Length: 258
Image (cartoon, rainbow, N blue to C red):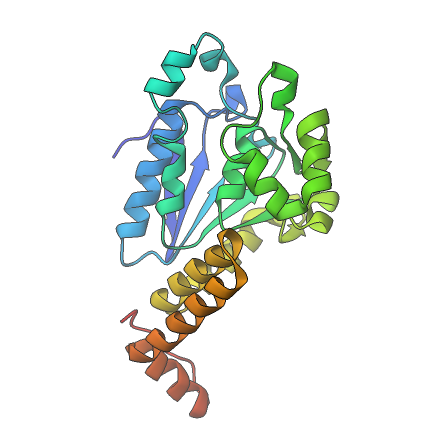
């Protein structure tokens, strides 16, 4: 497939999607989100791919949704067209892990896209924010829901109501970002993490992702029971037998993803 708004590549068992609207600081429009969804679905269906990375440029992961495109929309336009839900939410259906490698601005929809990923690795110059209040609206792609779950109510309220930006240090301290790396090492570190994940059993990795999402979205008792059953189920896989045999035999496991 030919893409106009993203660049797609692979590195070993890792699929990489680079947002590519540099003149617009990677502002997210419908065309870009359609392409992003298609690329992620293709990687998810590829048995040779075990993990994905979404990244942008050094200056901007994504500076937000495309305001120029949205400015003239009416309620009828966005409601009937199922704006955001139709294509942005597709990322939630991806079963393999998706890492956001963020440098520069991740604002509005850019911050929300990063939060839809499974975790964020940020460069030292990364800045996060939900400035929609300055435009007379509120976050519409999960910003009022995922942000408080990541950083707590107080910081989420602060960011959504004032529109201020959070730098990488504060974002890591607050729990939004998993780690901070030097700008020049962002892709190297992100790729190393993705390759490590891709080297494990795809079944176990997907089960871990699904179980953590249960914790994120549900109650503790339901989450623990889901985790327990997934843990039990993995004993029916070849990878569990291989992984434990390799440990006992003091050798590297050779997972078949079966």
